Structure formats: structure tokens, C-alpha cells
Amino acid sequence: MDETLSIGEVATRSGISSSALRFYESQGLVHATRSDGGQRRYERDVLRRLAFIRVAQRVGLTLDEVRSALSTLPDQRTPTAKDWARLSRAWRPRLDEQISVLMSLRDQLSSCIGCGCLSLRACSLYNPEDGAAALGTGPRYLLGDSADDVI
Amino acid sequence: MDETLSIGEVATRSGISSSALRFYESQGLVHATRSDGGQRRYERDVLRRLAFIRVAQRVGLTLDEVRSALSTLPDQRTPTAKDWARLSRAWRPRLDEQISVLMSLRDQLSSCIGCGCLSLRACSLYNPEDGAAALGTGPRYLLGDSADDVI
DNA sequence: GTAGAACCTCAAGTTCACTTGAAGTCAAGC
DNA sequence: GCTTGACTTCAAGTGAACTTGAGGTTCTAC
Image (cartoon, rainbow over all chains, first blue to last red; front, side):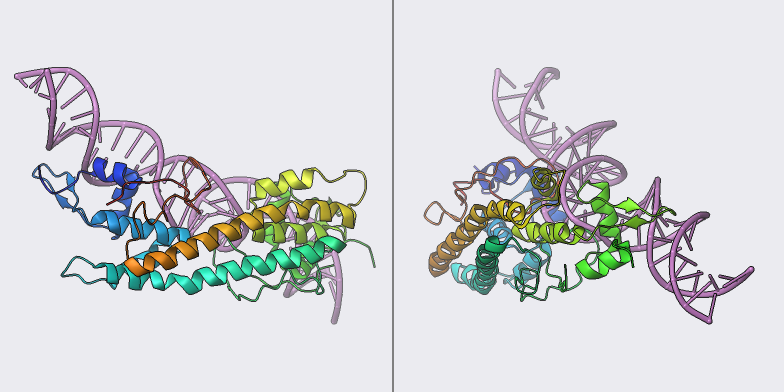
């Protein structure tokens, strides 16, 4: 009975696939030691770390942001409940904002449904307050551009 | 003064880039006639269609879903305000669900912050009610898997 | 000691919603 | 007539978060 876990065990217990675990390691999100034969061996506290990652993703963080957050954890000792609480507290405003954006979208939609306009200054579904600017190339998962004077 | 718009005019008025407009056409989301020289000419009502697409994306629809929705519009006549209202009414439950998922995440997070657990049955941040199953390959923008017994 | 499951690496593929670039054509004003 | 800017097509690239596959090694159990 040793104290470490194989990648398969971690995958089963965390619900995160082995390939994703290897990917996370390549991205510096988790760490594993190796067996004599070169296979990954995980400390038990990796599970909490993975839990953090999972929930952070649900909150909408990118893995880059997750890495930054994790990098503020102490290196020397196993993080405590307090450490994790500190990190997750930072999500609150973010969640609040997401919720309020969706709620205002819903409310505006209700008033737009009456007229079927969908498209005007009067409607303003177009101009969400969050000025999420140029996102570069690639897909846009949330559009935040402005587009006035349509129709 | 003709009645149609060039791609540049549509881009300016809709806030959607020319390349995106061409892409939308290739995906069957919008339609354009052609000038004698082969350049795109848009009817004025394309702007409302684009408005619909934009807002639908903000609600979280994929372009595939947008195409399905648009395909229920009448082919023979220009869609009326009523037509658009019918389509956007379908978004309401979707928005409601998104909001409630985020709100329960926020609430659970609040109670978890107290203990820093982030990871347990007691916490349940892991098991969101929406059973969004195997999403196939590619990135996961919203995780909905279950992973019990972590830690 | 060996079968078979589980692991390893590395490169390439996947999805979505576009963008970028190359190489050429059209349209408007002077 | 000519320049210039706006347009055309088509192929390939982008970013995020992984997955898949090929080809090989290790671990465990009998």
C-alpha cells in the first residue's frame, strides 16, 4: 500500500481523463513524480487541485487563468483549506457579473419580444455594458462588440 | 440609388466583418444576390437577420442551432416582427436555465468558501443537475460531468 | 515467465467561429 | 484611361482544451 496514485486511479476518482491529466501536466497545472519505470505517480492532494480546476472552469476561467491562480499557492507546503478559500473567493464577482449580464439580456429580450425588433437603439440588446474588446482570431464564445444603427 | 447594400456597407452597419459575412453565407445563414461583376448585393432585411444571429450567439446558440432556427422562417415572404418574436421567445427558457445554473454555483461556492472544501459530496459543486453528456472531442466550454468521491 | 492491461511519448486531429493571405477582379472618381 | 479602394475565391491558420493514434514500455497477476 503506497501513498501515491496512478494516472488511471486519479482519472477514475476525479472524473478527468488520463489524456487530460497528461495535458494538464504539460501545461503546468498539476505535477506528478515518476515510478522507477517512468509512470506517473500522484500525491493525494492532486485531487483537490483538480477539483479546483474543474470548478474554476465552470466559473469560466481559462486554463491560463487557472494557472495564474494556482501559482499564488504556497510552494513549500500542501495548500490548506484557507488557501483554497482565498482563491475561490475571487470568483464571486465574476459569477455575479455573468449572472447580471444574462439577466439583463433576458429582461431586454422580454421587452423586445413584444415588438420583434431585436435590432435597434431602442432595444439595445446589442450594446452590452461589458466592453469586452477585440478577442483576436478564433471563435468568439461571447460577443461583446457594439453595433449601432442596424436597420 | 439602388436598394441593395454592398458587403462593406453591411459590415459597417451590422458591426460584423466582411469575412464573417462571407463565412455566414458559406454556412447558409444569410443570402446575397450578385452584381453583374459578381460582387455581393444584400437586401436590406439581411440586417435584421444578422441582428438575430448576433443576439442568438449572446444567448449561447451555436451557428448550427441558429441555422435550424432560421430555417423555420417563411421562405416566400420577408419575415415579420411576429416571426422574429416567435424565434426569440424560444431563448427564454435557455437563458433561465443558464442563470439558475450560475446562481446555484454561486450559492454553493459561498457555502464552500467557509470550509475551503471545493471537492466533496457535501459540497456538490461537482454535480450540476444538467447532465450534459459526452461532448465528443474538442474543447469543453462548459463541463457538466459528474465526478463523485474526489478526495 | 508470460499475458494482458495499463502505462509511456509525440505528433496530429477535432470543434467552433471565424481570420488571414495570396493572387486576382470590379467599381468609382478624377 | 487609370488609379485606388473595395471586392472576389480559395486554402490555410488561429486558439482553446483537449482527444486520438501509432508504436513502444511497464506493471500485475497468474
